[in-house]
Image (cartoon, rainbow, N blue to C red):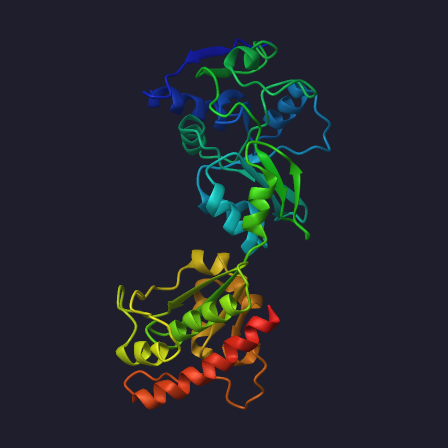
Length: 353
């Protein structure tokens, strides 16, 4: 038995000294009961074997059932998991922080559950601890997960080192768990977010077109591809374009707007965007105009190498020169020729994906 220190906290007026104390206890191998938006949990330092052993004993949980990792930022994801799919990134972007646990491939060859709670107390304690934190529900295995402090502490007083009483949780329901470690993706546990809602995000496709300045070629590709998808009645694909060296906020060039207008497309609302690691992570297919764009992207995000192709290469256009020349500064007629090539290519892409 240990003497459990119990502290009341007001979620609307947090005393960071208390949260730092909880983080310090975690870092040094202690167990802490804390609230999340779903249920109360018992937090432990994943890197402390004795703390994890105590956690298994307290919960009376089989050793073959690993604990999920709780993180305080999306940036911590790649330190714990490998081969994160675009679908997983899209779902995480949509539902984190929140009641969603994702199962991903781990660096040791197995799998790992990861969650980013939507609770400032939990997030700050994780941050202050400076360690990787596991946090299963604060109950004996087989019992109902506690949604208030009374139920969390009743069987654990004298077994944990520190406990924070923040009243009732906001959602009063466990997180939904989805397994992204293999396909097809599957809902492992229904929770606060409906599984169908998560799968509707996961199962969409995302295509990203990239050129240099995101003012002509990738703009043509984006808008022509969107038009083709509408003609095919496809609503399951999201489309985006970006540049490796854009002028931020620049619109499509005048010649680009002219040739797209001939296709009945008004691209006056377009604004150039710079390619980011986040964009690349969430794209199932990245189509570039020249090999140099591929090289630039791989310098930012080498993990996307199996999802990046030259546009003409992916469209199987079978020409010796797979680059789409940059029309910037050329005549409207050259822009038209460029657009004709891109139009043919994106029509083929629409048939493939």
